Image 1 (cartoon, rainbow, N blue to C red):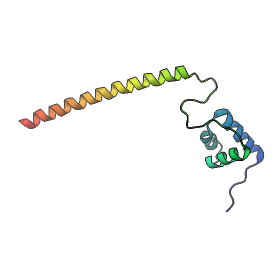
Image 2 (cartoon, rainbow, N blue to C red; image 1 turned 180 degrees about the horizontal axis):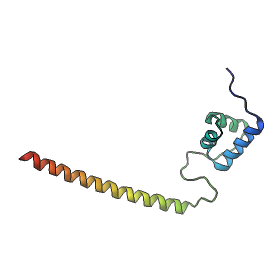
Image 3 (cartoon, rainbow, N blue to C red; image 1 turned 90 degrees about the horizontal axis):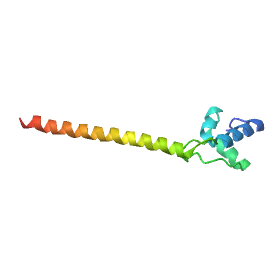
Image 4 (cartoon, rainbow, N blue to C red; image 1 turned 90 degrees about the vertical axis):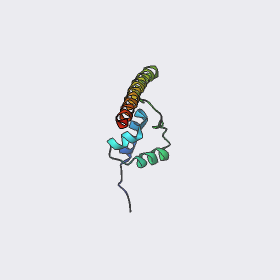
Length: 102
């Protein structure tokens, strides 16, 4: 069973876009091409694309300090929320123990 045939120009355009963005999965999805196909094109063409497993945005104007600060801020907010929920659970458990004693 033979798959869908893509033109060389289309392949080059997809690979160029993948190289620019560094996200082959997103490029494949946007162009309605299976991700594995884009990877095989890359392998055949020996095109180097940034790993999509790395964290953070892939744009060239990406500022890692700003990104790290945003992540730390979000992390601290989530820790605070978790602490509040733990305290709430503890209070409810104590209240439940007191009502069961009567």
